[in-house]
Image (cartoon, rainbow, N blue to C red; front, side, top):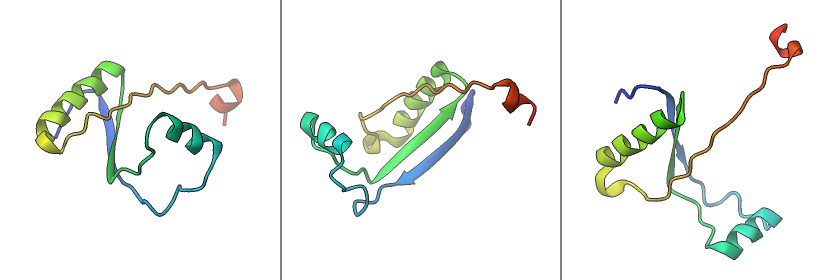
Length: 87
C-alpha cells in the first residue's frame, strides 16, 4: 500500500509474558483502565500529522473489522546541536 507522506510502517507483536512488573507507571495506567497487552500494534511514521491521519483512515478501510478504535498519535521532536551536525 502506497501512502503519500508515510516514511515507514511496522507491525509489532505483543508479548503478554513481558512488561508485567508492578511499576508506578503500570499502577497508574491500571488505575484509569485495565492495562492489557495488544496482540499487534501498527506503528506508522509520517512526514506530518496530516499524512499519518490519512494513513489511519486508509488502514481502517483496508483492515475493516480488524481495525481498532484505540489510536494514539505522537509527535516527536529532534533537535540537532552544533556538535551533532559536525559528527
